[in-house]
Length: 455
Image (tube, rainbow, N blue to C red; front, side, top):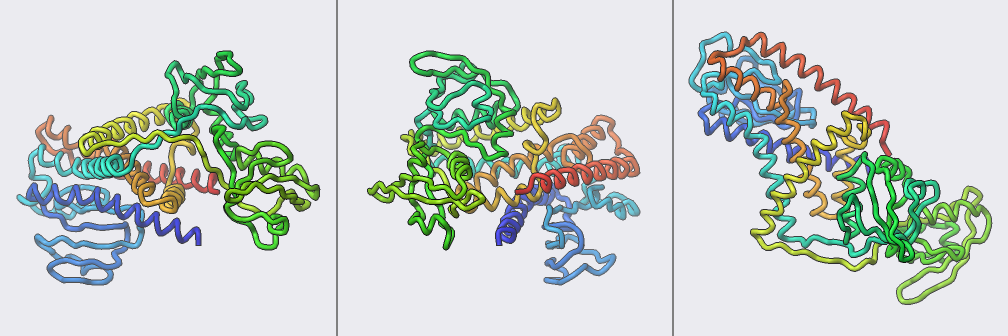
């Protein structure tokens, strides 16, 4: 069921992004007087579609059919992207039949450099506009939440935090010289902005100011292992109790908050698991909160150190809400786009220099499906925020000067404009073939990385 849920949201996500991107090329071509032969969602075999000449049809179109000014709107068998087939252009389809006749006024190849660039860049522009619209809407409708706490609640044994010298109760004051007020600022610095870097952290411990060096790359390893980096205001609650388990026998219930286990305050799920798994077939004393009541219970873990619960965490820190009016939300959206573009290239550079693992920076269809489903399960705003980030990433990738991508086509058009002549179609096809092979190899590597990191 989880697989089908992920697959559904993957298809929805890709369909939206591809439609928006290809619609940009489509409408720009139409505005430039260029015919569009096909508008496809997906690749490969045509499943079904519609055009003005034949109406709705199933399967492939008849060979050598001339749709004239009509566009065939189609859905294809592989839902991993899509394309717009523009008349008179050598693209991913490598179609060169148009070279058999003289250039026509409705073809891409007869248009000015300006119109060509407009058509080629329109997909990227639409993806940026989609991201901008979503960011704007979220900023306007949902206030920004900032957790007012900077005190570490739990330092897992043998974790990057412990190795760096952190202790439970340390209050973070500065990161790389920047004063810190909110917990989300810490997470943004450690796991996003400063990923793969050494971070200088100034803390307060018992009235003393201490400087510590924290390796963000080590925290990434902790994150994979499920070790927590949580504030002191965190509580662990029971998300579910397995039927006929030791937990159910002991009287534990869903939504109980676990305060203490064996007299140790519980801050993280990892901490809870460590304590329970260390006591197989031995009584474990638990203090829980159920509504307004505080209860003491005893549970005996199984021989493999389990009691049969699913846990989660909730942070009770006070929240600072920041609201934006309509105009402010728009300017904030521009800032969001700028920050994410800078972050994208920063992470790329860190991958190239080996500071960040490839699997931490890039995700293929499996990872996209997982994140899309997870964000959709949280709420609609989380899902469309992920959609905005993905749309922006698609725009950045597509504008890169690489064959097959929009940026590669743009470079060729600019060169033709400078040379004042068309580059040989044979050369273009060779460039497209090389780019396509490299892109396929890259996609295969990304999918392999997804599979190896699949959870």
